[in-house]
Length: 172
Length: 168
Picture 1: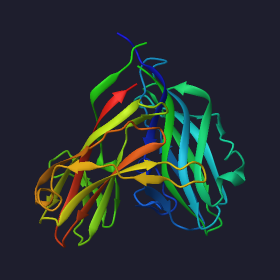
Picture 2 (picture 1 turned 135 degrees about the horizontal axis):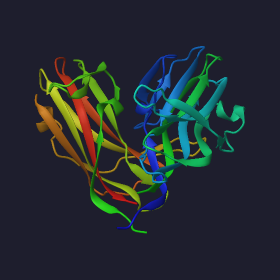
Picture 3 (picture 1 turned 90 degrees about the horizontal axis):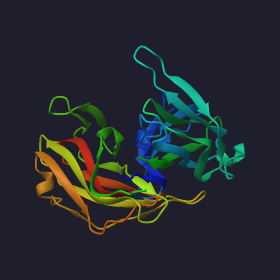
Picture 4 (picture 1 turned 45 degrees about the vertical axis):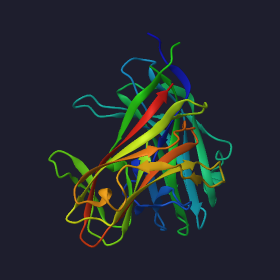
């Protein structure tokens, strides 16, 4: 039996799977481009947290399943610039029965268009790529969340989250 | 190293992944015990449910997933609807600082929009892509379901299933 080792796999993660938390009023809305969708937050002086679940295959065998390499996040900032937008790449190891989960932040690098804070907040269309410094094989006891912290202290700004794409090597 | 070319793959898409606008939608139990659905309350307007087609894609041409068809399970309750229409949108993501663009591939909807699709009953609508194509990593599909309703009808959307060819 052969096996697959494909280094070019990607998976779209729609905004409906994002965890938008309790801060801010998030609604499902049509995107600015007809035929697209987004999750949008209200214009208010607030800092909200959005977690993007990275829904790709994992495996109970080491070094098989998915080798997560990067995540791209598509968003639009409208009306006014944000005060800040930062990302954290968390790997969660699920707890055993009666045990709590353990979270480990992973080192990553922003793409060159978003590695300066000011580049992440301007009014524009954004395709922000977060590349893991060391890609990881995901065990079946693990998953990843990309956490975005969105500071709208300017209170004249709106962000539309259009989706994300996870890039990975698939080995089965 | 071998490779996989499987023409019989399917992916269940739960109602919790669907994007619903115009109307009041809630996650509730389905009509059949132990099922789930997204429920739209009666509203004399056209409700739009976008179903994100969550399939693998690839940075390499002619690999990843080729979308062949989508099945949508829904139920019309209380009364008949006016029309139920599917549109498949293929979104090409924008580069940084650029907007996305949308194309509308040709499809066939097996239940006629104002006839078989609107009956007060359980429905399994199959939407078939006329010319299936491999999905690039900068592309994704949204199946836009428009439910044109009178004042009485309510809708339960139970699930969708995407049928595709997998090549990795």
